Image (cartoon, rainbow, N blue to C red):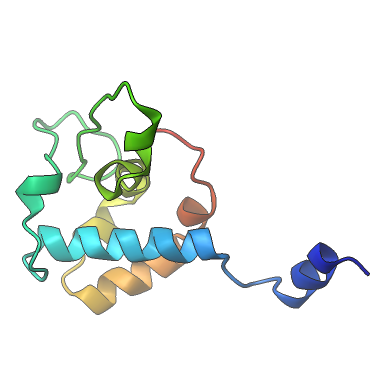
Length: 116
């Protein structure tokens, strides 16, 4: 049996490393937004102004870049995933509540190719 087949049968419900890193990134954005992190939110992100946003009310602005390298920066790679979260998730009252709601939206973490 091949290694890929063994790991796929072993970890049917497991997350892969990329998904875990994406989850950690989203948790860090939540902490920054709510003042639970030492990192200032305004240094990395801007909130989208106006009430014409679908999905959540705390959408982040995605800046365009000419360099492919920039898409791997924390402040760029997390924007699409954050913008796909539901309003109920991003407006969670506590960090534990956010983590629980984030776990329920597992499909958002599993597919990083979807663009908002």
